[in-house]
Amino acid sequence: MSAVWRARWQALPRTARTLLLTVAGVALVAAALTALRDPLGRWLWPDPRYDVLRQRAERALRAGRLSASDGSGARELFEAALALQPDQLEAREGLDRVAQAALARAAARLDAGDLAGAQTALQLARELQAPKPQVDALQARLDARQAEDDLGELLARAHRAQADGHLDDGPQAALPLYQQALRQAPRSLRALEGREDALQALLRPAPAALARGDLAQVAELIRRAERFDPGFDALPALHAGLARAVEQRLLQARQQLQRHRPQAAARVCDGLRPVLPAPLPEPCAQTLGDALLHAASRQHKAGRIAQARHLLDLAAAAGVPEDRLQALRQRLHPASAAPPPSSAPLTAHAHAHLQRLLQQAAHAQEHGHWLTPPGESAWDRLRAARALAPNDPDVRAAAAAMRDAARECQARALRDNALARAHTCLDVWRLLDPNDPGLLPAQRRLAERWLAVGDERLRGGDVAGARQALEHARQVDASVPGIAALAQRLQRVRSDLR
Image (cartoon, rainbow, N blue to C red; front, side):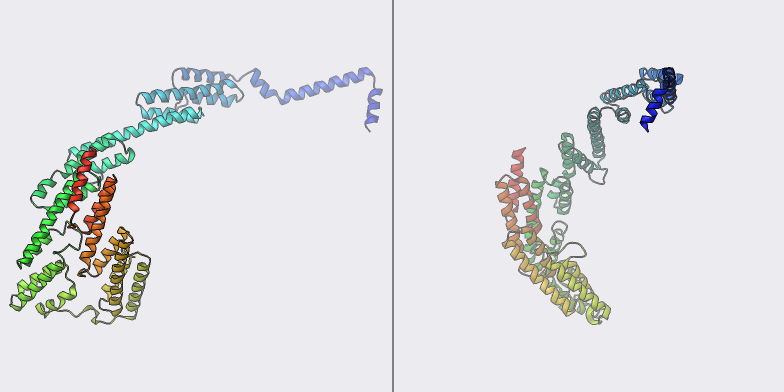
């Protein structure tokens, strides 16, 4: 077919062939011009509005008006020009120059301390796609300066709160604000010095309170200070002074009991309750309770009912179990003596609930959850069962089994040198049988072990570890021999370090 058309083409006269080729060429050129009319037109004859917008943008850029919400800024004008002539490079280059000007402005505003202005200019540069390394470097400088200013404002608020006497009485008090500042900048010298000054002001009443024998106030001030800095320099001396005062009080209570004055001993021991964790050490525990119970019985036999009731109340406050008080209490209050709680039989539903509580207590104990989590621990479950049916044989058996297990746990943990677990098991043992004669030597052994740990860590230069071990020893038995000596050694070491 192509050979036929070629033959026909060649059969045409030369003039005809030339004419046809010319017509075809003209048609192709016309088609191309038609297709490219708009781009060529914009290139050869730009829209007059484009030049107007670009010139306004240049003037705005020279005037430093980089961006404006009313559209008169260099950015908005260059973008409007670019929308009219997308293929014109001048508008694109103009936007790049606006981005560079925004970067320069951000740096200048940052140097001048205008952080808000610097952030606005930097945001404009980022939106115009300024070079990322330059944007990131300026942002890092801006963030650091903002953090520094925030820290300064925080410290100023803390200083004002301290000047107004608000040391730790709320989140806007001086010590909480200093702690917040130290979380932001742990090495801030201003924050560290401010906290030290505030702690000194907080503990200023402590020596006078110790001198007049107000141990409760001293203990409360120590607890408040330790919330913010357990290693504060003034604390070891206060702890040592408090420990000596506690030992003196215990000696006074012992002397009062030797003189057969249990009420006076009870008053001495009452002053220790806000200071020491329950149960109190001897002689303020079983020894005092026995003496008060014996005195109450003597007063009852002598017909002095009011005195007997008062002594009985003191014995209850001293931790004497209710079952030991019940017989004498019924004799003192025969008309109002209530039947034991277990006299009413449990309903089927209550009995089922009781069994569930005992099972949950056993399960928690097996997993080592003696005291935590609250409400779900072995002790909490057993306590709920005892409240429901204190004289139920299953409850009594479970309590006895848990007491024996806690006692064994304490001894085993002590052998394994797991002192924290030994402390927990000792606490459970105290709760279940506060009058067990084995408690005092057990807590004394545990406190002595903590003191040995503190001594070892102090010899190794671990002052913080020694301080923690001393605190554990105080919690277990504040009257253990050697506790004041370790506290004094810690104080000397800390003074030498300064």
